[in-house]
Length: 337
Image (cartoon, rainbow, N blue to C red; front, side):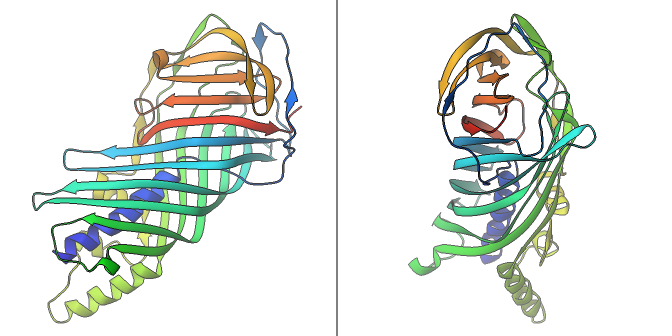
C-alpha cells in the first residue's frame, strides 16, 4: 500500500541521517606538503594539542549497517579530504571543528510479508559541518555535533510490492536539513597513555545517545497532504509516522523504530594490544608508529607520537560500536609539531 511505502521512505531518510553523524569531518586549509618524520621512543605520553593544529585524513571507506530479521540498511561513504582543526583547548577536552563533503552509496531491504522492498540511497557531495570534543587524557571521543542544510538525498526504488510506479517516479530526491548530537557517557578511546609496546588494555563500556532534528520541505508536503486526506477519511500515513512530522525529532523517531535513542558499547578485556613499533610510509610522510591490534585482529591502528595522532586506521568495528561496520582511513598531512 502507498502508506507503507511513504512511511518506509521517511524511515530511510532518518536512518541515513543518523548514520552520517557517526563520523565527523572538516575541510579547512592545511599544509599538504609530505614530510619524513622518524623518531625513536619506547614509551609515548599523551600529546598536547594547540589551537590551529590540523590533521587531514583520506577516508577510502566508512560503512554502517543496521540489520534485523525483516530489514537491513547499509551505507558506504568516502571522503577525499578530512581535515580536523583544534579550535578550543579549555578544560578537559579539545574541540575540533569540521566542514567537508561526503559521497556515498547505500541500500535498504525490507520484507514485511507482502514482498521485498529494495531501495538504493545515494549521497552526492553532502556538505557537513559541526564539532567533535576529544578528551585530553585519552584522545577519546566524548561528543559530536553535526549538521547539514538543504542537502540532497536520492532514493532509487528498485523493487516494491505496494503499487505500480511509472519510471519517472522510481527516483525520488529530497533536500534535507538536519542537526544531530551524539553524546557518550564515557569517552570512546582506542589508545591508552603512556603508550608502550608489549602491553594490553581494555575497552571501557559506555552508552551513547543520539538527538536532534530533521527537516525537509518534502516532509511538510506529505504532512499537509495526509492531514487534508484525513478530512475525508483517506489518511495514508501510518499513525506512528504521521506523529513524527513535519519536523522529525530524532529521539522520538529512534524510540519509535528502534526502541530508544541510547546505544551501548560493551566493555572488552584486553581489547587492544601493541606488539611493536614500525616504520610506516603514508601520504603524510614516513613515521615510526605504534602498531596496535584491535579486538584480536579485526582492526589495525597506527599511532605516531611525532604526528600527535593516529596516522592510519582500518578494520571492522561492528562488534565494538553499534551501527558502525568498517573504517579505512590514512593521514594525508598535519600541521602538528
